[in-house]
Image (cartoon, rainbow, N blue to C red; front, side, top):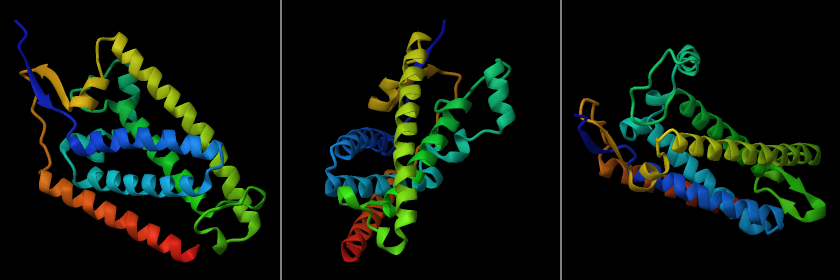
Length: 220
């Protein structure tokens, strides 16, 4: 008889990051398309703060949150695709790990390009756009627009993957809401990061975000 038990897979830090990012990206899409630029800029700073937090917990968070737990060698990813490697962890599988990295890369490019882009006709000026030439402003704006479309494509693939795993009887949504997952008793229980440490990382990220906003106000 198969015995199941419930363990915490995603602690509050990852769930907070994930759902805040969903909210912020939705608002960024709306403000970007309807040219609500000041709100778009502040939301961009919030995303930058959120990613700073994610990078910190990628090194100092819980076991399944750490980059080292889900960034596998490319050969492992290929073997997983071929069915020659069985994922034993509770968090991201080898493909999912690289999808996380791709999202981080896309967002970093969008954050950097957003800081320096400018479009005079639409009165769009990134906080750091005054430090580069108008030609570079235009280039960064083009990059920002292109990667916004790439982001939408990546999100679509992410949603498709979620429904694929739902079809395979692997619900990825519930653990991201409750943080908990039912597993076989023979599986190893994951190590959780102390809450005090996670709260410190969150506060550090908020200080970082407020400092960036203050500096941007000075520049503007």
